[in-house]
Amino acid sequence: MEQDLFFLSDLRFEPPKFFEYLLVVHPNEEIFNQIKTEKENFSSEYNVSIAKKTLPHITIANFLAKETMEETLIKWMHKIINSQQSFDVMINNFSGFPSSKTVYARIQNHEPFKQLAASLKIINTYINDNGFPNAKLINHPHLTIARSLQQSVYEKAIMDYSHKTFNASFMVSELILLKRMNQFDKCKQVSIFKLAQSEEAVC
Image 1 (tube, rainbow, N blue to C red):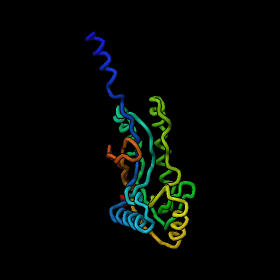
Image 2: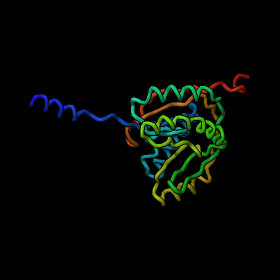
Image 3: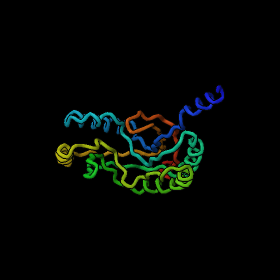
Image 4: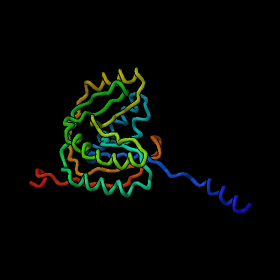
């Protein structure tokens, strides 16, 4: 009987934890603070609290994985990302995604982000082998101001933001890997990946 009880207690152990991982770019401090202020102003102007709860970032990829997969994923990602060159990002005014009711600061040149995302496709083999779907890779880089808005709020905001101007630039020299249990969980930093210094930066 004691052996049976011991076996049953084993079955109550928690299952392996699954996380959502996000690979992101943070703008430099000056632009970070400008976008953060814009998000706070949006929240106040349109009474949308969610706008100010997320920090400014550009998502390169997101995927699901077990915590036990972290070490291998980080090794692969270090090797891939370290071979990619740093690049400049130009931000030019605002736009929106009607389908997701999102207002965002517009990234002018998408190609460096797409090339970076394409280089990460190789990790899908490892993710798939562990029973998870392919990573979602960036196809339209942007800096979100607010998302999942009500239709009426989105329509008013996108009209207002079509008259606003915002121009800035910064250098992307590193990517940050974050993880969270779900979309309402606070993100925890897992690792930082440095990009290779570009020839322009060296000169």
